[in-house]
Picture 1: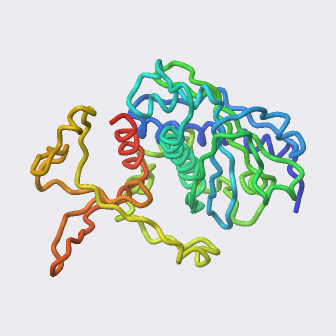
Picture 2: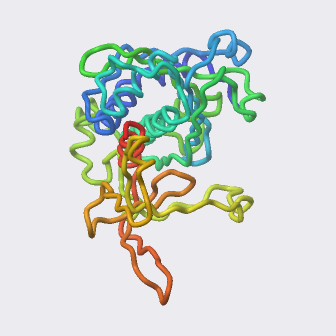
Length: 322
């Protein structure tokens, strides 16, 4: 395998406008605000300098992208930037960020990181025609640790951009990939995004690409409509891991004094209209909606909608502020 060098970095730099432009579109739709990413910078980062470069706790996601093979990326935000973005994601204006990144905020930020990863994957599809999917994103709030598979690499590719929301700078967003991903993105490996699919000036703007490529270029595709994707390698090892599935009819916020006044026969009005679909949650995270049915003497749920990542972000945000 060739070593990642400055020539590869220059090749990747030429693709930054398209990559960050598509991420901006995805993030804008997810938070319902105008998000832009500017001042892109690509650098070569030796693996030995990773921990010294990124000191202290921060919010970061470990994302797995599936193309011709699987690549692991790190998407990182400084704590203050992450807190501001979390406040915006739950409907705030960024002026009242949470004092700390708790589990609820980390779940919100995990969905934001998924949106960013999905935007990167979509940019690769738009500019090169190479199939690219996001398999998973795991969010962490800790000191940055490299994935185990990176430990055999010498150099990493680091891509930075400044995140703005409604014109106000939020902070730096950093995406780090290993040497294999850098070489692939630079067109050095088989099946890499060489850019041969680009034609004329139509490829000069990622926003124009999204409009011209039709439905397949949308950042989010409802899972019910998406084509089946092959299961990732090794998934059979965890297929028998039990998960808790919950069907939620509705919620109600009450004061302690009101709860203490509840007696047998009391009626609690929920925040759900009669006949409205109920939520289906797996391990506390909404994944679908459905309608209640009766199967012999038991209640059941008929799935009517699979929640896509964008809607999951909205629902998690709503529950975080409920």
